[in-house]
Length: 367
Image (tube, rainbow, N blue to C red; front, side, top):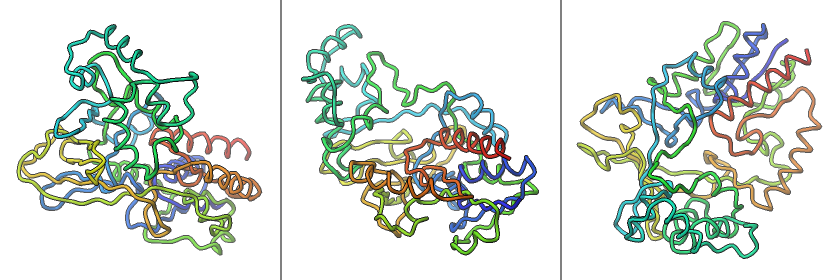
């Protein structure tokens, strides 16, 4: 049985590896010149810094199976992601925690005091937040919401915060202690040699043939028994129902001799600052030492067809269109859609790997 996998990101690489180990011949193609998709990393030739070319990626999961899987193919270095945010010329800790609250209000509250204080500030008329703004107001009140969330979120998503689903904010916790770890998952790390090396390791199997710089054409399907599609769902169907909306990112690179900001990620909350954050890439590898620095200013905007898609928007219009595309996908035979783009879902790396493993198991069980 001959398998074609479109996309050499984590989803495509994992599905190909699982099927190859089960005895199937897999041909993986990707129109980019590198594997790993948007988690592509490479050494900067001038400084030697491992740069996350499409923005920062930190691997975090509670799934031991997924953590064990990535450790097969890379040396995962422990990394606790900590984010800071600049607001009106002052730096605060993120996610919102006891330090942030005390800094912002100029207080020295204990945990119970801060919890009661925020409860008094909370605005939640019916107890059922229906959008991002209502969710934030129900957690932290108007002061913290307008300072830390409103401007940043509207820059990131390009729409009013009240038009975003409440689930967007549920990814960020509110803490009443001084824990400033961005993620709470048990396993967190970054591969020592980067994500591209990790993905190349997954693809390194005698039954996998990988072609980079190779675009998919519909007539290819006739040469294979099954197609796994990890590209954009709407693109597979030639956008016949319209374009699903994505946000894309533009990066403004600059160099600095020394340490520019002292952390890997600095968010910018003020609405009049056009970028959402600055990433300083050497801080993603604290086990290395570099005198110079490579930094990115990150700008978010709506994605066109020629842009790299990052975040599915999934507002009401997209939900209706997505339902139509899902019906088309369900009617396809010998095609499986997976990954962030193939399912139009906001999947972290661990979720992408877990989903690909599950899809492989289901596919093999039917054979």
